[in-house]
Image (cartoon, rainbow, N blue to C red; front, side):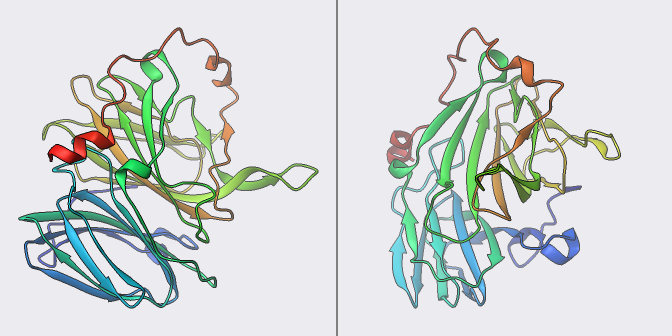
Length: 287
């Protein structure tokens, strides 16, 4: 399913709840606020991750206060700040820039974890794949982060490159004989930004038996839901593509299974794309 910008007067321009997605856990919103506007909320029985897409904000809460001072001007101008908030946290977020753009994901939890404000310089950068299947992954809330279920990464795919490829899935929980997770059952969203307004990506979502086999063309600010199956992406030629992934489910993990038809591609790459990394934490300082 692909969801386009709703242009809501409330500042919420993407909004998907677990009930309408027929999911157990994952919820997501994208919000824009003008300078001085506030968002006051209570996390209730949920853990939250707030990802700064562009601008600067201040958060005052019942668990602490935080402020960004080097927020990126857009997703192609640096790495995200990410604020993790535990359940039962009251907070007010205030926009300190002319326009503030944030992505927010949350899921229900019965655990308490400490709030954490993760700065761009703390985010590990991984260059995954090779040749024209090369992309950059920034770990925002990585597996092993001190939370219950949420995993958050942002991915940069240069013009013309393949991403999330060779294709993988994470729609069933599979353990080895020692109880280690080989594949987690995860719900996932892809939230897109493109570096030019007319740009686009192409994403396929399919199962091995092709009972689900859909091709979509997400543009800037579009949201793709991945209910199950494999889900590779291609960046349109001429357009660098960003997507923000929120995942949650059976484990705080990214354990997955490759499409066996394409697994042979691992190990065939001859090199890395010289355009990568597309962004670094140093870029935030000049935004």
